[in-house]
Image (cartoon, rainbow, N blue to C red; front, side):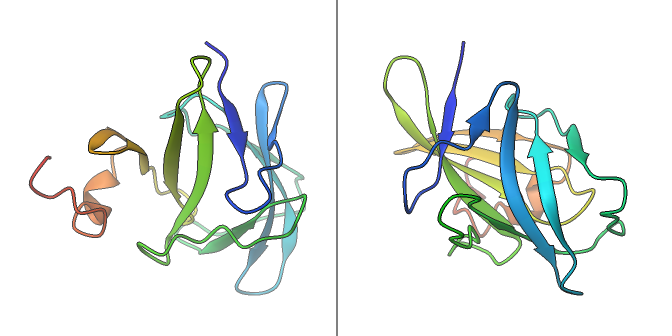
Length: 132
């Protein structure tokens, strides 16, 4: 199943081939492109070797098309993009902006899928504490 990922502001497509492409900046103003695997729960990332981030460091994610900051209103450590599946359904996808933290949520209405060993860190902010 091929899912498309789009910016919530400009609706530009972020997936190219087998990657979702983001422009990023750290709090130290280091910037670079990060390519994430499109399978939810797969935390493989590709980036230039000179773009080094420390474990636990906060990384701001931006749309590479319109430069919209993708930080979620639910929590400053989560980014949000949209995912469109083959049937045409649109989901909100939230993922951690903390290096090394594995936490992803896929929401549509009241339905949620939770991925990653650190997802419990955000259950209260996602209003999911009663569902987990």
